[in-house]
Length: 283
Image 1 (spheres, rainbow, N blue to C red):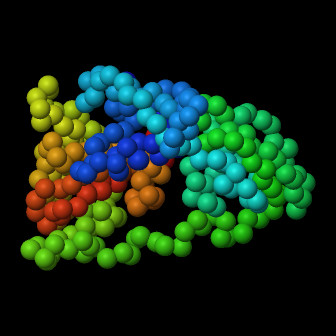
Image 2 (image 1 turned 60 degrees about the vertical axis):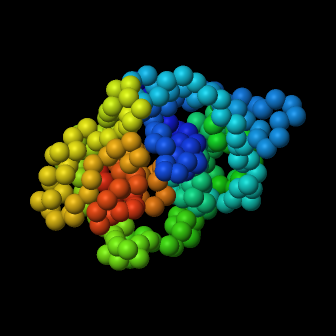
């Protein structure tokens, strides 16, 4: 059992993972989100609650109610997006995401048909957040223009990660420490995607954890291609698997990334290792 998360759901998972040190690995395999509800009158510091259920056999069980605040659509008021293609709710969401780095999806909006203006023409449309949206609330008026988009509206950031220094967060007692993310940035592990899948270990013991399905095969191929030694997952160094769109500093040339958090020894200690791969069905 697993859930296909919307971008808003993916953001909630990211926030959950970043809340704890070392990270607690949550993903679309071990969590299912319910329908968000408006917070009760008098609530302080949040405006939304949502029931989250642990998937049995995937590391967690039971339910917990999260309290958080959804993002008002009015934050993107004044937006003007342009495209030479016909406008749909899906294309509007993607264009806004490209321009602002937001996490919108067509499912975040109340359904509506959008009439595309004539070539070089513009129109104003109103976007209304659906009650079921995990991440958004309210409404906003934006302008759509049937024309070529300006380049700065489709490149949300000019800070590129590809050429960043692989030697980061150096420990004075281990001066040759490497960043597991940057060192593995361009490696393609698509052929080993089955080995990368998260798997549960430890049964009901105190030290149960999420690791790789086949760490032996993964470790063997890493040795063959010259990647320095790193220890396998354990209770304080677990594995998560995500769409690269969920992980801000991942290599977006790939579909997904498996992350080994908090490597415990070796030249990558102490960093996270990123194993990028593609979903062949999408290619």
